[in-house]
Amino acid sequence: MNRSSSWLSFDGSSLCYDSRFIQSDLLLDAVSTTEFLGVSGHIQFSVNATDRIIGLYYSAKNVQPSSNGLNFVPLLEYAHPGVNLRIGVIESVPFTIAQNVTDASGQSTMQYSGYVLDLIKLLQSKTGFIPTIKLAPKNQTYDGLIQAVVTVFTI
Image (cartoon, rainbow, N blue to C red; front, side, top):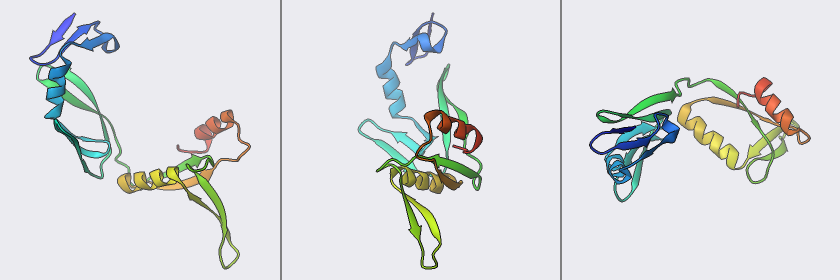
């Protein structure tokens, strides 16, 4: 089976996982002139660099061949700002650092820092969710962590 347009050819099975590109250089040329709204915002390609114009929109799209070239089909859009997410983390320096901090009135709270928390803050600023961060117990088994994702945490 061979399906093609002027710049894009597939050779192989009708199943997408068994197909391959015949004219990948022409596909690369087409992609270099493409721009779209992606997970990290507006994305535009050029021959020399990848320019990303940062936006506040979450969108994932699947690339599908068509008679007119490529189509970008939306798969998932994050359209729920303000939603509460219960996020489970494990302590693992430098990714997640947990410190018990006592304020002047004697109140003790857990304070988190590290790469994972920086990522959560960045995603929160981009998508508008409200995180509730919970530290998994140090003695938690792997199976227990998976079960907690099912029953306790949103992610």
